[in-house]
Image (cartoon, rainbow, N blue to C red):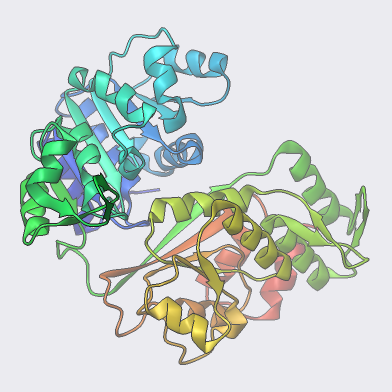
Length: 452
């Protein structure tokens, strides 16, 4: 696909190439990965300012997102990359391959530095989700800091760097500039910009910024930082869409294909039957989302791929409110279970009280069914990000749900709509039907008919 960057994307890529230390604070869906890869491509092959890049990212982002972005854009076709995830042997094999970019998940940073036995000879470092290095006491932070002097160029990427307050910034920027802007020691940073807040005798539990501290801190980091909230590269508001692809395992794929082919799926605890093309469409949508209703009405688990992707997106939001659209009842129950396990505060938007909480910014995650996101429901005060866990064939419902956030009165500069798509399933056909503005039953029937 030909890369046609927005003005802000060109600006950000040039910013990376012109500055050895950079931090991009861009909202999800604004193209942080493609921006960074474009800059890397220029640094490798145009200006020859770098030769070997290490990317540190969350596991599924490291495994899938960077690879997919490189494969997606024509201008990146010369980039060679190696993904160092999996077992110790698989990681070592990847790191020893000849490549331009080496991608590793953040959980293995300590292993890379202390146990792998492989020389740390990277001259450029990209930290995707810089906010995951906000603790200066974490092992991953300490390991990467030991290697930081060896790196000539570094890029930090995140959407929300200080979800827990300005104190988070110190470790993140220490990793970027080795203490040049916010100081070499956390104690000095606290003294300069904060005062004790909650305490018990000599034990201080939290700090609050001194008057004017926020502006001073931002001024100190402004020369190496791009934040979409501080620039004017996008119209107000602009709608940005993004896709997040998940892939079924071989066994999960066999189950999906069996139902698509035979209209009957045999499972250990029951049977799933689709009587016609419309019913088959519904069953395939359910399987794509991760579970399916059997003939006895019971829910049969298929996979957790979309739940994992949803977890990654919520983590990437780093406390910024997200609206999650689901379609089936078992989607709601499985999402609820995952959020409870993660100890994330959430609510289903099905009452005036829950809607008020969302609009007051009290809910990090809100769950909504498209059929209940009726005309005139104002949710734009609560957030600017929506994640489609499961899609609907109805263009009207799809557009109306997105319009709950993408509307006048939205104070954020952009509204970002994420779609979690299961690869090579009916999800792709639904998304295409929506993009083609085809809301008729013929699209539904034709989509399944082609696969029978």
